[in-house]
Structures are given as structure tokens and as C-alpha cells.
Length: 176
Image (cartoon, rainbow, N blue to C red; front, top):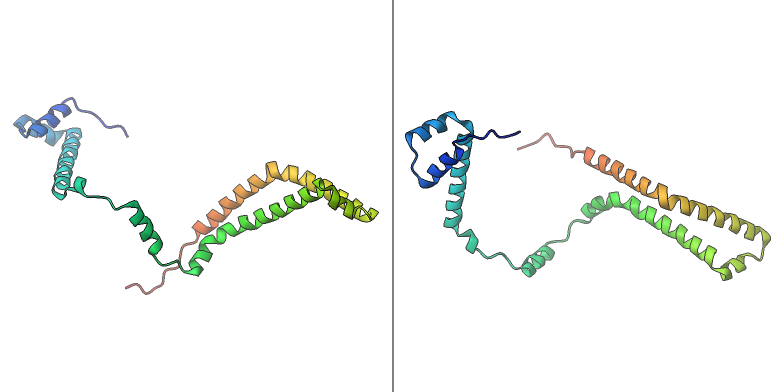
């Protein structure tokens, strides 16, 4: 919404600052909503300045950062159930990251380690299974790492956030 300006607004503010309101300016303040709002704002700022000077807030010293840091860690540790509840939405990401890490590690070990590959290549059946698993893992790793995983993580986080924020705690009937 755009504020409508009055041509007399600056004159009203100057007379308020000087402390001498003429009859014309007082009459104008009664009829002009823009000047009336500016006058109320001017009065509020003047009162705020007076209060802040009385309380000497500018001279008050802020607490030391080390004191605040120590105070934050001196509080009791939160209840284990509350921590468990707060960390619950993050567990799915933890599990997904573990699975991805294990798959990537297995891929790296079998794809780039000839000694381990040679150990399993003694049997033609094992070597065929490992070759197909290796090619499947390479294909899936390339595909999932660039497209699917970020999309799934983003969608899951939106769904989880929506579910968590959708529930309100039940209020008991006994208030008072």
C-alpha cells in the first residue's frame, strides 16, 4: 500500500521539532491522516529516545561471549526421549547415506582392486556373477548419483517436513 504524502508534512514535522504548533497546523493535523500519522510517529520516536536516555541503555555493557558460551553448556542436557524425537526425521537420511556409502565402497573395491577380483575369479560362476554385479553397480551408480538421489532426498525432506508440521499436540480438556 502506498502512503499518500501531504505537502504540509515537512512543515508539521518542523513545527513539532521546534515545539510551537500554530492553530493552522493543529487544525491541519485534525483533518490530514498522513500528517496525523507522521505526528504520532514523531511523538513515539521522541518518547522512545527519552526512555532510552533515562535507562542509559547505551552505557550498559553486554555480557562477555565466553560467559554466554559457558552458560549455554552449563544447562542440563535435554531428555533422551526429546533428542530421539528431534533426530527422528534425520534417521532416514542417515540410513540412505549408509546404504549409498556401502554400495559405493563395494563398487570401488571390486572395480579397482585386481587382487580381490582375482580371488573370486577362480570359479567361472563367481566371476560371471561378479561381472554382472559390477556392471549393474556401475550403471546404477552413474544413474542414481546424478539424477535420482537428489530428487528423492528433496522430495522425502518435503514429505517428512509436511508430516511433522501437520501434527499438532493434543490439548487436554482440563485447562486451568
